[in-house]
Length: 156
Ligand code: RB5
Image (cartoon, rainbow, N blue to C red; front, side, top):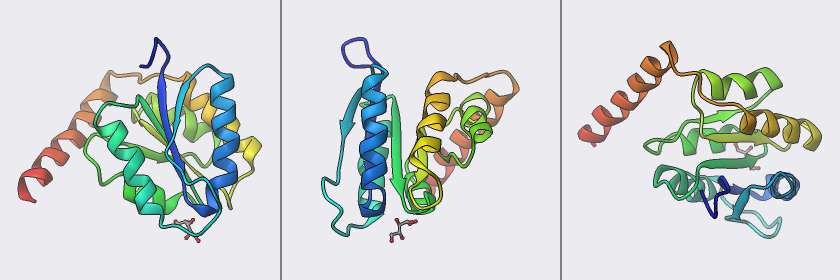
């Protein structure tokens, strides 16, 4: 939270830079405190660097939610999910956007700029941000993910 507003960290690679701009504007309009972690131009970059920047903010608690955009959303999802406490979900439709929050307590929304329109991504982000974790039986399952992370962390 920043000044009573939910905080969001957003980043993309070169393929997602335009969609990032669009999503950032939408979230500012909805009242979120959004930190843009880049890039600023469409020059070629490597998506893991930007996934790491957002994932560290979410993992460390400096951001409540993360948003990532690359060409397909797949590279960003793979990279962000390496970080402890990060549950990144590729929001390929509205149903996934809703249930990623309700059932998986996802905290990073991922989009593919080459696989979906800006309008569809914006609508899915709105759904994602509006929903909350349902807990109940789903909490037991998410806790099992946390336990896996702890075990793997001890092995590393
Ligand atoms: C970049 O060309 C592309 O590989 C990247 O945006 C993404 O789709 C990776 O998953």
